[in-house]
Image 1: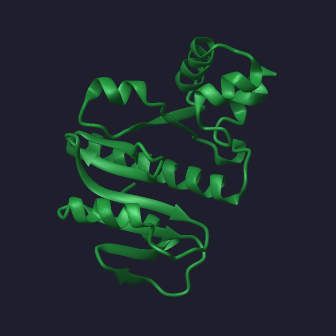
Image 2: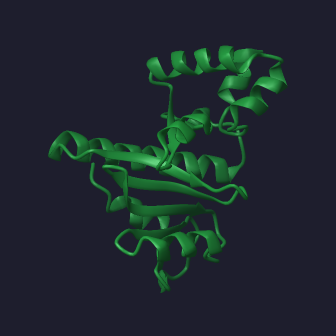
Length: 183
């Protein structure tokens, strides 16, 4: 039962919610997650936060290396596929150029979220939000893009007819954008 729920961790990305579902302590669940990371089954995306202590308290988002293991709707599978491609890109930049690049996400106190923030030395290089078909730029993505003018902002749409620029946010076909990543 625990392993089945661990495999559904992308559908229920918060560890506290998942542990309540199985009546397993968050500590035990964290140990299982550590094992799955060591076995290269899952990886975590940590929150971007200036205060390291607060970042450690926030829950990581968990993604599978093999998107076939994702249990959830099309949106969860699509976000997981984007996470895998972005992580591969970050690792390529680390390995080939020795850059201190990390993959993070952003979530504020109101629960608004940006799926991914690619950072170098804890400074954002770019923000990425993934959607299946809705090309409406989320206000939080636009606000964060305005706050960090040197970082790019992209809204990746899986089913998009025409790419366009909306303010500081580039709305793009996900396949085209992901194909331009290194590695």
